[in-house]
Image 1 (cartoon, helix red, strand yellow):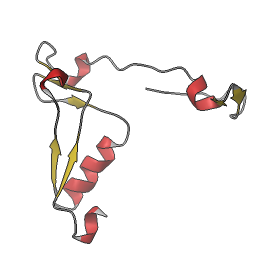
Image 2 (image 1 turned 30 degrees about the vertical axis):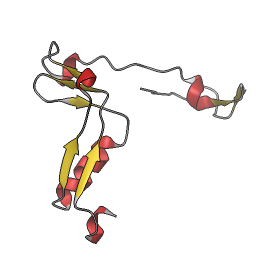
Image 3 (image 1 turned 120 degrees about the vertical axis):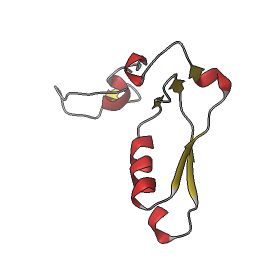
Image 4 (image 1 turned 90 degrees about the vertical axis):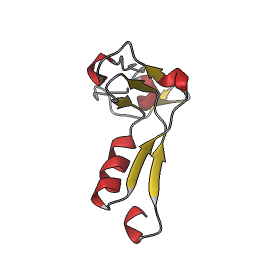
Length: 90
């Protein structure tokens, strides 16, 4: 655990880094950043050059892919979530 004293730094990847340093990554990275800051642990983003897009100025310019709801509501083609449930699947 980050707060237990055995972690010196948190290193994550990112899908995209833009000109001002904003990053976009999978769900969960934000929580890791908050935990690192709270516990006074360094937080670093490591990416290949192909993930850096200096043509985009800020994170607001990053296109976030929206995946099909069925990825969350179905397993092997069978519905496992209640009918009419709303899904956000970036």
